[in-house]
Image (cartoon, rainbow, N blue to C red; front, top):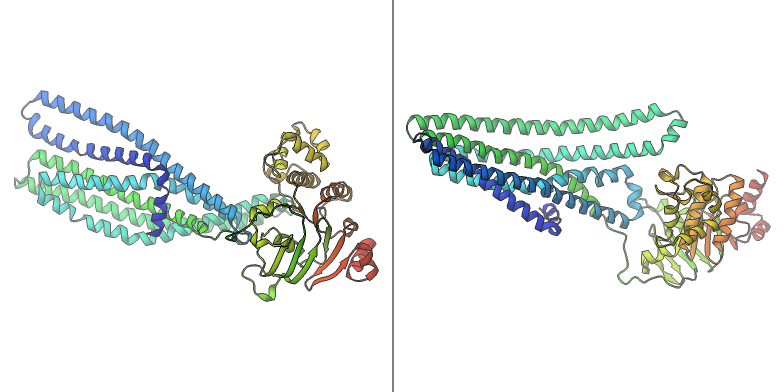
Amino acid sequence: MATIRKFIQYYKPHRKLFFADMVCAFIVAVTGLFYPMIAKNMINDYVPNRNLRLLLIWGGVLLAIYLLKAGLNWFIQYYGHIVGVRIQADMRRDIFHRLQKLPFSFFDEHKTGSIMSRIVNDLMDISELAHHGPEDLFLSIIMLIGAFIMLCTINIPLTLIIFAFLPFMVWFSVLIRREMNAAFTQARVEMAEINAGLENSIAGIRVSRSYTCGSHEEKKFAGYNDRYQKARGESYRVMAKFFSTTGFFTDFLYLIVLVAGGLFFYFGKIDAGGFAAFLLYINMFLNPINRLISFFEQFQNGMTGFQRFEEIMAVAEEPEAPNAKELQNVQGAIDFENVSFQYEGEDETHLVIRNLTLHIDPGKTVALVGPSGAGKTTLCHLIPRFYEVSSGVIRIDGEDITNLKRLSLRQNIGMVAQDVFLFTGTIRENIAYGNLEASEEEIIEAAKKANIHDYIMTLDEGYDTYVGERGVKLSGGQKQRISIARIFLKNPAILILDEATSALDNATEMLIQQSLEELSKGRTCIVVAHRLSTIKNADEIIVLTDKGVQERGTHQELLAKNGIYANLYQYQFRQ
């Protein structure tokens, strides 16, 4: 019931249109009740008594009723669906908003394609449920009550005989509901897996082609597809059981009406017009039954989708301190005080960072070097609170970052990573991501500082050049310089460069290194690097291993120590 109440909340912004739709549906249901009674009078009175005037009058009344129904049905079909689409859009807006607030650990645990399936596929049936669900339920109740009253005016005992079978149909529908719910939920889970596998395969199409692993990808997809086919087949098996049995019930009701009504007519308990009206009303009686059957299918489809929607909406957002402050006038001093970190679900034996204490002066460039797995990238992710520390404190300008508003914290931190992500769109749009309010002149100035403006101007479309999905139409160096231009535009006080040039050739690296040096001026800069030649000019170099800080000093000081850094540097120099 709690889930249904949450679902109903989404009707509130659209209640005027929804109630208008329900009023129209009510009028359609009521007008439908007139036809059998008019037909009864025609058969019993107007035709036998040759009353042409009343026959034509009531024929005209029926025509007017049908024209009214046509107009109302148009309103119901159009605006009823509009209500459903708007509710679906509201839910999609809410779930996307929630995704922007979820911790990074959520995205570590959930596949991109699976999340997309919840936003697109699972919410698709909600639109139909939001429109047809209340309408079918409301119309069914009105028509059943109306048909019962009208039938009682013709013959009460025959009416009670027919309605006595209704509880059995309702009982069966409720009985099978749980089985349908489980089957539809499993089908949605498997659909999410197909989307996740498909998204992964398409994103990695160049890798699979280069390794000639197309047949392997086809086998993986066939596995997803087969599981979905079986799950969907099971849901259709349950539906077949449901519809075949309810179909038998409706046919059996026709049989009861024909036999019982025929006997009543035979013994003079009902006249010919009444018998004909009874048959017509039974047809109207079966329509709401069929609507109820349809409602159960829509309800299962829609509510399983809504439940999966609610699963994401129930995930806790990134926590914010009750009295969190704005980070303003940033100087850039960074302190790690006994910081330890482990990923969610891991125990203390899997600490990525253990009791790290570190001070970085404002405006200085500090380089982090060391073996893979020492926690260098993780350390960078802790500063903007992409992950929460397991213990210890990180401070910026003496302020515990957990007491700062996340938005203001991240506004003052810029990151350039090795794996650059460009959004599908134009070069201009990707640079402007650093400051969505930036003018054209500011975008161009940022591109110039990143040494990418001259290249952009050689393109036919210039800044309006389409970069392709994830920037596939650009080289690694070009993408990297666009990401640097983006940071120039953001103009943060603290800069994090996470192996920003390690994937580039030497010539491109030298060009980008110039941009990075320009970018680092006047900022606190943390550089993670494997190529030690790129960090020789850093104010301080910190050697980080799984045991914590092992060495620190300038390039010359660390070489003089002849320790870990000196060995790494000499090895790279030999290479």
